[in-house]
Image 1 (cartoon, rainbow, N blue to C red):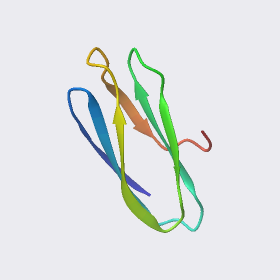
Image 2: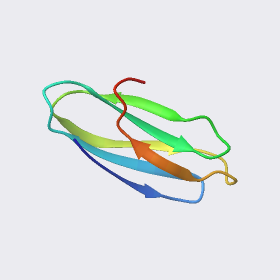
Image 3: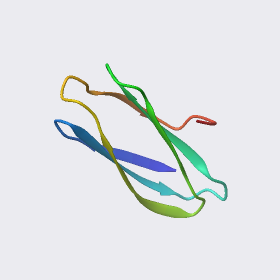
Length: 67
């Protein structure tokens, strides 16, 4: 699975392309804000927009085994 992201001042857009035959999870860890976690279906590509407050920033984007 390929994952990239484009951070903004109050949001981040996560782009994904899941080549796998199974669903996968993507976790966006934010400072000073709860983590965002979402599941993407097998063999799909797209993007997800995550809003947060201005005092937060993206710490990491990972693909955990489950959300």
